[in-house]
Length: 84
Image (tube, rainbow, N blue to C red; front, side, top):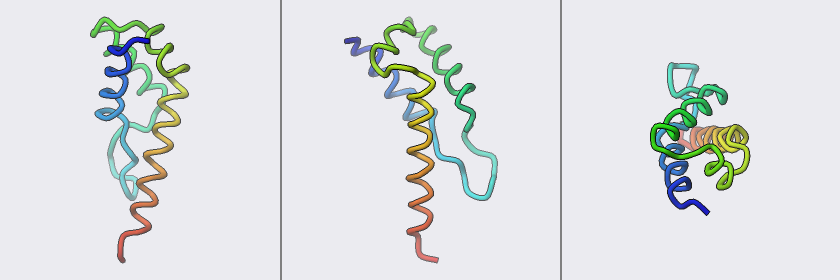
């Protein structure tokens, strides 16, 4: 198991995958293909192979998609629980 790859993925996700902002305003990218490409490019610059990332999370695109879905659901729930 590659601790370096896991640490990279966790760091990258925390800093790059964010919920959509309210009312369609400009915000974080919601394009999974774009996010996946950015992650791969940054990992390559850091010397982390795609195989090492795959060993940690399986399919990188699906991992990013599921993470993005989760942060969007959490944000929607947070907004719905705010007092009006």
